Image 1 (tube, rainbow, N blue to C red):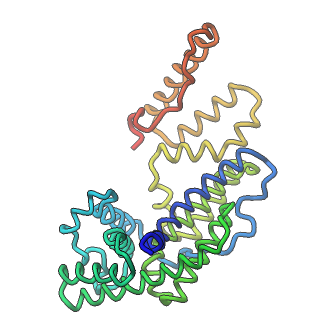
Image 2 (image 1 turned 120 degrees about the horizontal axis):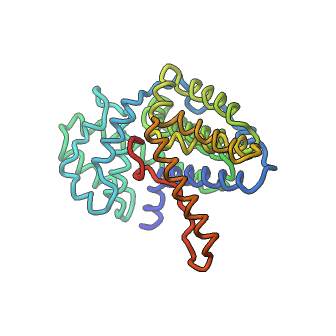
Image 3 (image 1 turned 90 degrees about the vertical axis):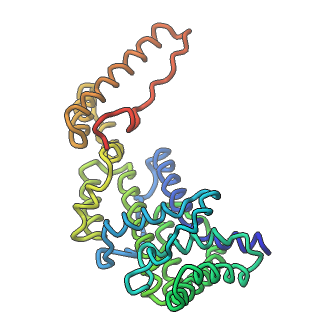
Length: 325
C-alpha cells in the first residue's frame, strides 16, 4: 500500500520526465531517418496560447521560490524556513508558484502509509505556519489538488507511452482537461497553467527545430509564429530569454539541412560564421574559430600518428567561452 501511494504521488514528476523523454526520443528518431512524418502532424490545438497570460517575471519568481524548497532529501530539513504564504497569490489563492509548494508537500510526507496519514501531516504543518483562516484555505486547495493527481495517475496508467512530440502534447492536453473537469477550469489552470504552457512551448519548438525536412529559414518562420501564438506581446522577451550559447546550439540544429546541402568546406565555414555572428559578439566568434583551428590540428596530428590514439575532439561548452552568458 505504501509503495503504491508514494508512486501515485509522483505523477506530476512522471509527466515532466515523460516530456523530456519524448523530446529526446523524437530527436533520435529524426536523426535516424528522413522518412518520418512532419513532427507535429495531427497535433491538437494549443492547450495554452497567448490568451493565458503569464509573464516571464512570474515564471522567474516561481522558479526562484521552487529552488528555495530544495530537491535533495537533506534539503527538506530547511522546511522550517519556508513560508507557505510566499507561494500563494495576494488574496491567498493558487498562483504560478503554488504548484512547487504542493509538490514539496508531496515529497515531505511521501513516506506516509496511506492518504489520511499523508493529509494529516500536511494539515499539521500548514496550521503551524499560518493563521487559521489562511491555513484552512491552503489545506483545502492542497487536498483538492492531491486527490485530483491521484485520480489522474490512475487515468494515465492506462495510456500508451508517447512516441512523438504530438503524442506528448495530446497526453498533456488529456491530463489538463482531466484536471479542469475535476477541479474546475479556474483552479486547474491557476495551478498547472504556467507549468504546462512552458512544457508545451518547449515540445512544439523542439519539434520544429529538429524537423529534418525543413530549411533553416522555414523553421525560423514557424518558430516565430509559434512564439507569437503562445506568448503574444511577450514573444520578443521569450526569444531573448535563452542564453546565447543555447541559441547557438539551437540554430545549428535549425540549419542542419542547409549545411548538409553545401558543396564545399569554404561554404560551410562561411555559413557557420554567419550563424555564430548572429548569436555572439565578435570576440566570442574569434574564440570559437580558435577552438576550431586547435581541433583541426588535433585531427591532423591523429592522421599522421594513428598509433598515438589521439582523443576525438569535443565541441566547446559554455564555460569554455567568455561572453556567452
